[in-house]
Image 1 (spheres, rainbow, N blue to C red):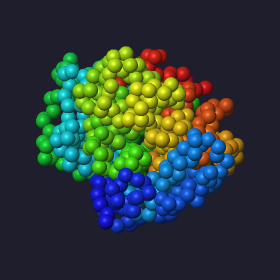
Image 2 (cartoon, one colour):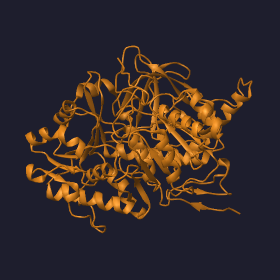
Image 3 (cartoon, one colour):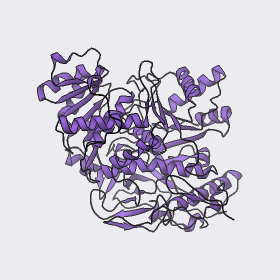
Image 4 (cartoon, rainbow, N blue to C red):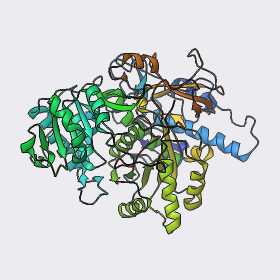
Length: 587
């Protein structure tokens, strides 16, 4: 007698679902049919297969030999726990990414991702990803933690984004491929602007709101946008460039702007109210089209534009759904059957890590709580008020949050996940989390620069507690190579440069073929980090002695301030201090 349940991704779990070993099948609701131009890849073997026989090298991206024989040379309870956790992770991966599974992969035969693993199912563009969110209708989506700003339910958000997309396409005459800059602090309208660009087929160019006028000018000259979507605080440093080039400007919260002075500038608040039944513009958005340009620190000291295609960003949007499903199974839960998450997102929206957090929430119809300048006391208040289930920030702010909870005696009972990125979390973070909350709150960390679309590797749950220094294991669509001096794959246990390849990989740097050629080799991105594979996990041991090839990764211990690294993440309002984040730059 089997009890079956099905979630939005078509996961079918039997026999009550609390044990990974009891999963019989997880297959899409529609038959698995590889997309044209994509070769099916044999996924990992069934859950009963030992880790050492699962062949993770060819499916998950780890080189052959990454398995660990149970009982081989083990002499402590910790080692036995490590083996059990590794084998459980392999079984979960096999269940989710196995034949017909919701996260099965195929190998692309053409396009920018040719030769890489990509998800066999799921959206192929960000427009395909965001359009179904209208069905969440009245569910809360964007919750403004700052007084005086409004909240948005999913239906309101989608109507507003669609209306703005139509204005960009119809009134402004913008066409797919045109660039649209988004520059404002974390506020709900940032998301309306970004997704309006995607619905209109434009290339969204999020910029750091802390930049000076000269820094804005460099990025504007480099990307050449036809429209600037900015808040009132960002209008002064970009107004001169817009006036000189004739670019259109839409100002959000521009209370001090007077249209009579600048006809090329419109206040968003003066636009017609969105029609809740209106559709986005009828434009063709193709998987191979560019979707985003994220500026991250380059080798010359100037920011480099990391260009990702629609297919790449769709893969980046799919990855968090896999992480969530794997986390649920690891806890003995049923993917898709848990309440929608409520995330306190303290990372600035222009950052690749923030996009990953947004994708995770939107995939499940979850809410995102915003806040301005980092304040631990205010964060605890927001967690209590909105029943926040997931916290996303840097290890520094997470430690600050726990310290404030200790000081006040606050127990954030609703919190279930602590998601940190930027630098490797100190051991004291895990110790303090366990001392205050036991194992009720699940720790999570991701690794991945802008070039890989975010968390290409992730570590969570039992494996995180056993190996907090490891960035974890790759997603189904990510391949890992530990490369020697000549670029060949090194065996497990040897240290070399970490190379990554997969669906979410960027196609290169905006208008910089030389830099693209240095950082991307045969479809692989050279991270510039030294790493080693141990028992199927990736451990980053430091940067290469000869400097960085690509932009900085999210787990390097000496981060930067750019969108390509969660080291140096700033407060969501654009402020920053040495106590809040790491700011050293790589050589």
